[in-house]
Length: 79
Image: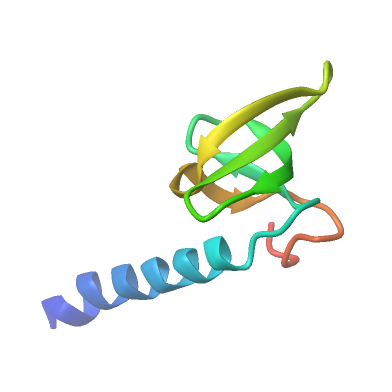
């Protein structure tokens, strides 16, 4: 019973996050673990570059630092 209550939901969340990270592309708005919201400008295997408003500052992040897609036309519709 403990498995179904704790481990199964964690595995589902992990798979969902891995799928979201694999589907990232230029132009997507994302939120990082530090709360930085930006638009992807460039993307590599391990890193991505985000453009952050208001000064269009470009910051480089590890791909694993992305927690979710931000709201917008490219988001999956969940809020």
